[in-house]
Image 1 (tube, rainbow, N blue to C red):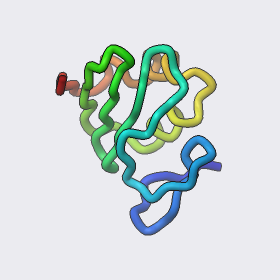
Image 2: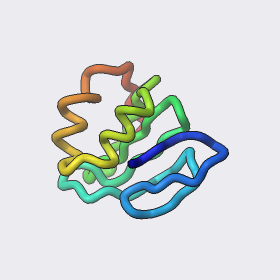
Image 3: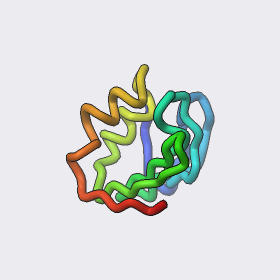
Image 4: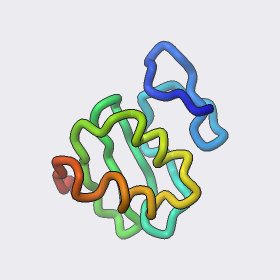
Length: 89
């Protein structure tokens, strides 16, 4: 099972063990290029190089996003239009 965002633990993200929080983690998606998460805010870089910040996203949703069979579908169903969003680039 994927446990995330405890700064004192190593975390397995998509088969890669990382220390959380994480930055610019690439994902396999036709829509999303990379994810960053600081334990509260999720930053998504899309394949068109636009970047958006989603405020106060629970770690359980980030966990689901990272482990979903379709990152884009999970994003559209659980994150898009559900959190305060700021366009970064």
